Length: 67
Image (cartoon, rainbow, N blue to C red; front, side, top):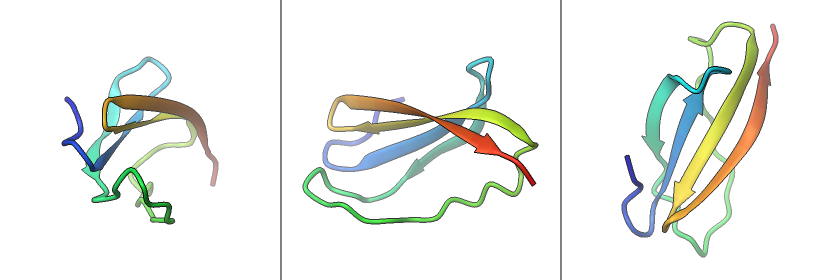
């Protein structure tokens, strides 16, 4: 699944690489920086990967959910 040109797509993956939260389109353009909030209440405690795809570029970061 690719992000539309000019918008960012965020997908949360579990430790096995399975989609834990489907892609969310941010509407964020490549020349913008801003904060946004994701509702992670449906995720269990654990380590996840946050995959951000924008304009053909992909970035992956680790996310720890602990309540």
